[in-house]
Image 1: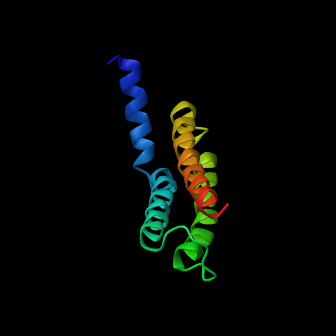
Image 2: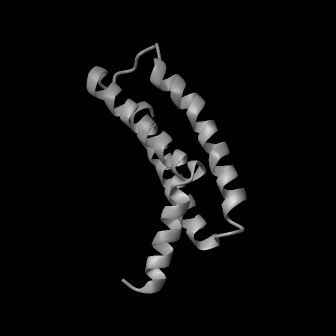
Length: 106
């Protein structure tokens, strides 16, 4: 592995160790697990009661957005390249949750 690549990986991992780096990835992982658990237990049929998972989704996604915004404001000026890569990972995780919710409830 080249020295430049090692530095990029090290810098990205250092950013992911910060709460504002890993929480926006952990929140969608939790939500994906909740969605898949609900589908495994109840199927994809419409149910009038949304349940706790839907309420967690409605609370945690805006919280995740605020954490991503904080991360971007705080980390982009100091480590632009690595911060952009972590932001891409965070956004991809959020989009995965939205895609799954849309697929099952769209």
